[in-house]
Length: 260
Length: 280
Image (cartoon, rainbow over all chains, first blue to last red; front, top):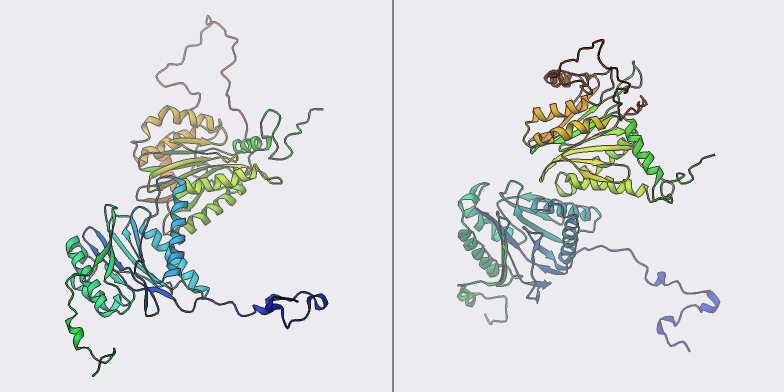
């Protein structure tokens, strides 16, 4: 008696040869067609002495708030921070790539280190290469640091390989909710020179609060990273949204279980 | 009959611990005409003496631009240099494409060093028959490297390779203390004077046979050839070798009947290898 159910009802191996299990597993090879566990917006703004960026700690599984302790701001090398939104497993793969990149760059020990513009170019090549294989890494990424001339650097690249730079950038919902608020204080190239770190921080905190109010896939717990033009990187974790008012929520009807 | 049985391939040691094929490759460099390189605090310069196979033929290219911040001067087999320079160009281009960064000089030099070393450890391959002087400018300043077919790469303040390069090295050793602070013009003239000392007796530096490559702070790699070197040669003035000439302040000793006749032969040149004219 063959006790393995998967062998039942198949031609006998001793007569017809071994069963080709490739038939059993046959099917087209598949690529990522949608993200599964996701992180929401990353927002960033340049100020007079660097760049500040923030991302909340939520990793959602669809509409379920699955993990509430996911860090999405990564320090890369000595003076670069990368913020990643979108698919979390693809983010972890990108983290792996960047870690390898920095380790191999350090082997040389020749005084040349990869900085933000170099890491940005590398990521944009990786992202466009994967989209060209029709197997994209499902993310939108912000890279912050300093340029060769010492001025602040901020760049965006996404799953299509689209790239652009601006003194204020946000991914995802932040592009609609945070960017207009950030542009109130920094609207054009060069405006960032008039903004202090304190002003930038106040704007970032305000944006994260608005995002928590309006973005249903967000969390009131987030991290804030600052990269200064001196090359100093600081990541503040477990920041909470403050001075929120949810009194308006009483008047919202039609979504929940309330009786009209 | 004497036969060296340890030079049939480039990977087998002789009992005395030598790799003959590698040493022959180093000899091939000396068959080529000289190239000289030197660095200041702001610039790196290479100068080279070009040769033509025959009077009606063109001159062999000696200096090759790799990228905006990087170039090489060669001595030895020009085709091998072409292969290496194509490789260096590829490396430089992928650095710009992948990282948006001009390739650090030390990294592209160790890349060709590794390539050359592989040939000394793989059966069925031969070492490159060319030496290179790599001049470039990157984030860490101006650099001059010497590359050898053995895979050796070393950084220098001043270096010379090729036929009669010992004379150029002598000049560089006597003057290198002035290089760091030298202006670009002085640096090039030092290079030309060193190169001039490698000339054969009846030869001189001409617009046709002299090449100059300059790179540095805010200066992209620029190659001066033919008419473009005329200005530099005018600044140099004396274009013939000064080797073995008496210093001007020493007067010619008067030849008199009573002067003691010496049997001692005139001081011999240490480096008398006549180059085969077809090598670069």
